[in-house]
Image 1 (cartoon, rainbow, N blue to C red):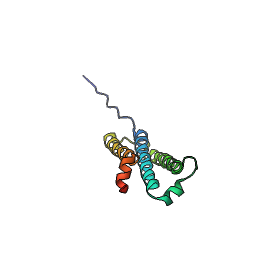
Image 2 (cartoon, rainbow, N blue to C red; image 1 turned 60 degrees about the horizontal axis):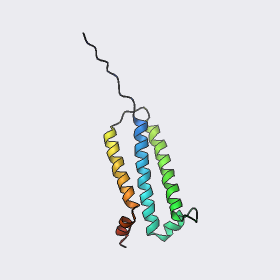
Image 3 (cartoon, one colour; image 1 turned 30 degrees about the horizontal axis):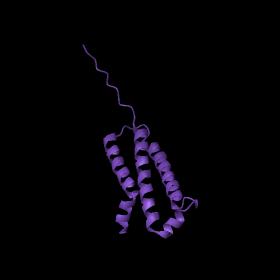
Image 4 (cartoon, rainbow, N blue to C red; image 1 turned 90 degrees about the vertical axis):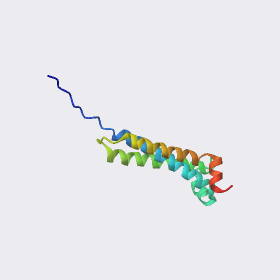
Length: 113
């Protein structure tokens, strides 16, 4: 007589929240970097600290978005078991787009420079 233990997989919602939040933060960083480079008005708004210029606001905004999204998703997904494959693929796509948007030749191409 054999008995199989059927253990439920541990909840991975908190980990999924962390992965997706960092990807969204990366995308926000890229979008804000592009916007700050393309528009002098947005660059002025993003200029939090003069020695670094608009990059200071870009990073501060990206960090705030990352932390808020992480907090919200961790609360919503706490205790749940999610499909990490889909979340990881979405996160990879968001990180790639965010990284491309911070790459100067790609930014220049998008701006028509």
